[in-house]
Image 1 (cartoon, rainbow, N blue to C red):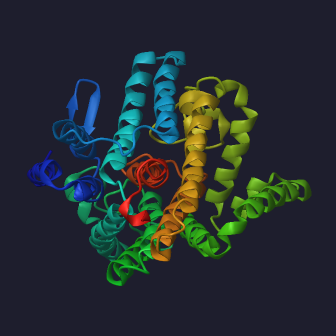
Image 2: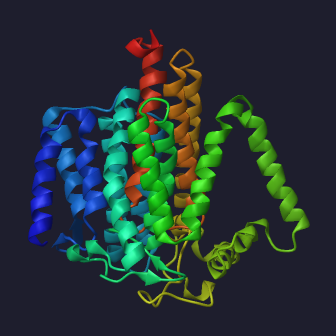
Length: 425
C-alpha cells in the first residue's frame, strides 16, 4: 500500500467504528469507489484489498456494538448462506481444490460480507434515503474524474496502481475511473441511476447530483452495455404506474420471448448481437449458446477449462475464454446448483420487494416509489449480469442492494406482523 491508501484506510477504519449505524456504509462505499484493487496486503495465499479490510472492520464493529439483523434471519439470508456453502463445497470437484477453495473464499467473503453488513446497517426507509444521498455525493467526484479521462485519456486513479495511467480508445477514450474496465465503471452508473431517480420526490438536490453523476459515468465509459442497462432501469421505473399488473406483464414477457424464439432463425438471445454492440453483442450471445452446448462439462460443479467454448481467449488465462456473463460465471465456478441459487437470490429479492410494497400501502407515495426504485436497480443488475461479469469492486453495489431489500422486507413485513412501526401507524 502507498501512503495515500494507508491514510485513507485509517480514516475509513475509524469512521466505520465510530459513525452511527445509518452512516456505517459510507466508509465501505468510499473504499470501493476511491481506491483501486491494486492496493492491499497479502497474507499467505489470501489477498486483502481495501474493501475486504473494511468488511472485516465492519464485522468487528457489529460484534463490539452487538448490532443485529433486523427481525432475524429471512429466506434471502438463508439462500445467500446456502449459495456460499455450495460455492465452497464445489471447489472439491476441481483439479486443484486448494486453489479453487481460496478463490471461492474470496468470492464468498466479498458477497456475504457486503450483503450482511447492508442488512445490519440499513434497517428503515429513512436509512435507505440517507444511503441513496450518500451514493449521490460519492459518485459525483468519480463522474468528474471520468469525464476528465474521457477528454484527456489519463486516469488519475493510476496513482493507486491496479489501473493504468492511459485508458482504452475506441471511437474516443473510454474512462474507467478506479474500476478494472470501462464497462464496469459505466455499469456502476447504470445500476445506481434508478436509486437516484427514486430520490427525486423527496430530495431534489441529491437526486439531481446523483442523476448527473450516473449519466456522466455511463457516457464517459464509452460502452454500449451500461447505456442499455441504464435504459432497462429507467424502463423499470416507468412500470410504477402499472405495478398492479406486473403478473400479466411477466407472462407477456415470457410468451413474447418464446414467440421470438419460434420465429427467429437463431435463438432469441441473439438479439444482443443486434443492439449496436457489434462483435461484443455477438460474443455474449455465442457464449450463452456455447455454455448450453457444453452443459455436460460444467453442470454439476463447474469446470476448469472453457477456452474451447469460443474462438477467442483471454490474455490472463490459457484455460478460459472471456466469461462476460455473471450467471455463466456462477456455473463455471460451481455448476448449475450455484447458478440456480444465485438466480433464486435475485428472484427472492423481487419477491421480497413485492411483499414490502403490499404491506406499506399507508406509507407516503414518495417512500413507496423509492422501494420500487430499489427493485428497478435490482432489475438493472439482473439485466446487466447477462452481459457483464463483476470481477472488481463493483460487486459491492449488487450485494448491497440485495442486503437492503432483505432489511426492508423484515422491517415492513415481519415486524409489522408482530409490533407496529412508527411509519405504519
